[in-house]
Image 1 (cartoon, rainbow, N blue to C red):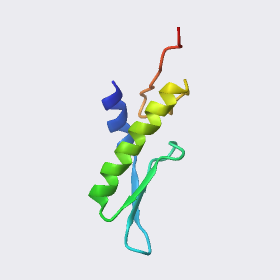
Image 2 (cartoon, helix red, strand yellow):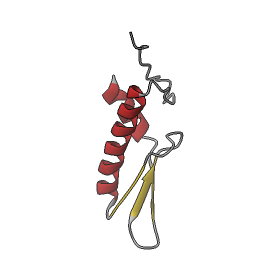
Image 3 (cartoon, helix red, strand yellow):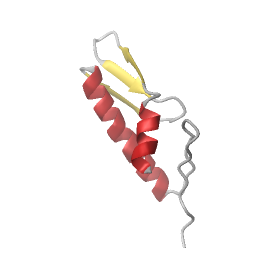
Image 4 (cartoon, helix red, strand yellow):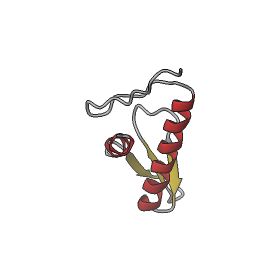
Length: 79
């Protein structure tokens, strides 16, 4: 389920070339999830790693996550 959520979120990633030639990537609705790298492929890979870390931190903090293409990532309450 987590991989499916990651894939859906990554489909919404946007990339743009900055003035210094590097590529900046982010995902709308995922505040603070961004990456930059020399190529779009490297930026995409880094962005996915950042997204994974962001989700794991959110799980640890019992946060809610954005709905992506009709999919919700819901984490059970702690015991």
